[in-house]
Length: 352
Image (cartoon, one colour):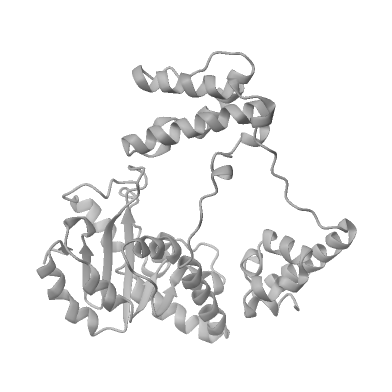
């Protein structure tokens, strides 16, 4: 049977089998490596004995499927990105989530990629050949179909294994809290701050005038990428942007030999615009707020870090799973915010 579902009739035919299941394994593929305007290109779905590929680009309504999935426990591996993609097409949130990546980490696994887990549990080595494929193309190659199916076909068994393991370790409630937090996080909209988007790696090494030039070059690149519907790095890589902003600030000619014609002309216009900006228009340095009492803050941070590291050693967990450094920073600055920042299970090891 062809696993690709690309008609409303084909979707309707599989829905009764999906409706009979409480747990459904799910994954998605997008075209972010090949387009500026990222779109959902594929939905992979597995239930016991069946694996399906749903084609969101085929032009039929996916609402019957989305309505059905909303009332199921969804099994995903690293769910945030997939849930955000599905949200764009009208899927609000799942009733329950089982994230096998979260489960593996809470069980103490240090290698928790899907490929690593499948290798450990099924003694299978999955190919990564289609990892960066263009999922917006049709038809999908047999290799891409196999790759896509493998993203969900093992999740049901992995979930059963980790559910038993989590309960054995007494960490099931930790897992439930973590999955609820993941659902809530994916349901929030991450606003794009135009004043931070252009601050790419290396931008902090530029002086104020160089930063102003970089901002103009970044905006030029973004316009070019949007117009061509291609990822920004296809126009110019980040390191090339930074290097050219530095060269221009020093009075050197730009180094962009691959730019031609009107695109090169627009690049030069952006460079001139950046060079022409006066000090009042230069970007302001972003400084993180520091606590009023540095010694008091440092003492709190060290105490929290020591508690976290000791608990992580005892529990055989990655310390960042209890609380990453940035979180410890926030709590050291504002201790009263700890219950709003951490989950209940994370508060206990930190004795908060």
